[in-house]
Amino acid sequence: SSTTTTTTTTTESLIIALKAEKHQLEQRCHTLEKKYNKIMEEVDFLTNMNTTLESNKVGMKVCIQEARKEQEDAKEMLYKCLPPLEEKVQVLMLQLEQGGDGSSGGPTTTSSSAGCYKEEEVKVEEDCKPAARQL
Image 1 (tube, helix red, strand yellow):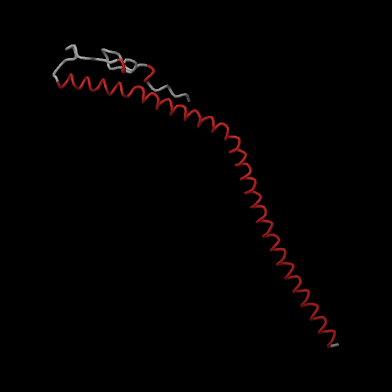
Image 2: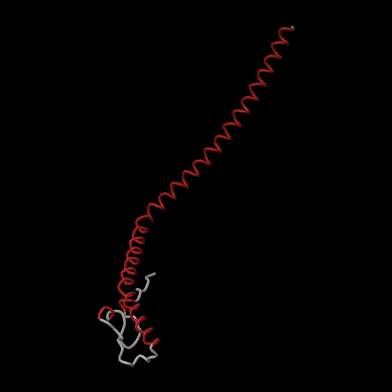
């Protein structure tokens, strides 16, 4: 009889231990499922982001090329028009220093600056103005 009681107690304690272990394993499984789902959401997000970035890459390359072209055009215009304009400013400054009104017959333009401003007015010709930006 005591053997039966000991066996029953041992069996019951084993059943309780197994149930506790089963519960722990179910909790662990549930936690791992949550982590897996979160990781899968992140993978989906990153995959979508990568797809979007890849699809925008071609368009961005075109935009970058256009911006570089605009930059080069602006540089070219600067190198073309700035020296003649500086020369015109020097001429005007000399006229002011001499107390002239600009009609004293002094030089108003030179051959190197003829392409960027008109003789009588200090206006910049169209090829020396920045191009309108396209939106």
